[in-house]
Length: 261
Image (tube, rainbow, N blue to C red; front, side, top):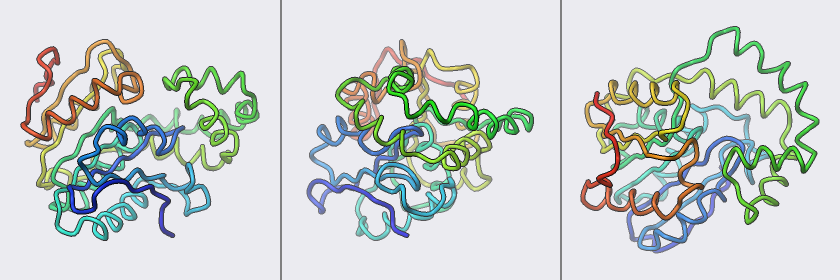
């Protein structure tokens, strides 16, 4: 089944594709959609999330297959830019390993590529079973929203979506997220790749960023100072300008610390 997506702008302009993180949906990119008006933009809801909640079961590979199909339909030999955050960044990596010349620019923002131990993964189902009833409580959702840097402007949308998510869906998303590793064909992707991670993110996220760099010779990697997991939501103005300058001339803010592979 086709994924839900929203489309904006001149269809003759380069195509910019936004892939959201877990726990949110395409609305997380509203500030980017408003900024990049000189592009043909699409913001996609991944399977079982947002307005794709009635679609096929979520998997990273399955999502990648569907998005590649959509890009092939819409790109019409134009320049293609894919911007993925967290879960969406994992999908982006999977896409790059499956189609080597379709995407021209890819931003991989905060992607986990170090699988958790079997013991940790076995805890996912019982943990969700224990905590799942809490997603219906607004007070709990407000705490969750704070950790995801979701402000009052988007809280009602977040609460509406999260409260209707099935426990099986949450389990699938977490299992996929915590099992993901870099596919063997990732190194064959023929595009410019920007890898970013927040300075305040967990060590495993920084190590993941380094792993991505080591697996592709055409990556530029940077650590964004002063932020944790969620820079597109925390500081959209900074994020947008950074992405724009990188695409236009390959430059990045001077205060960024580069990841050396």
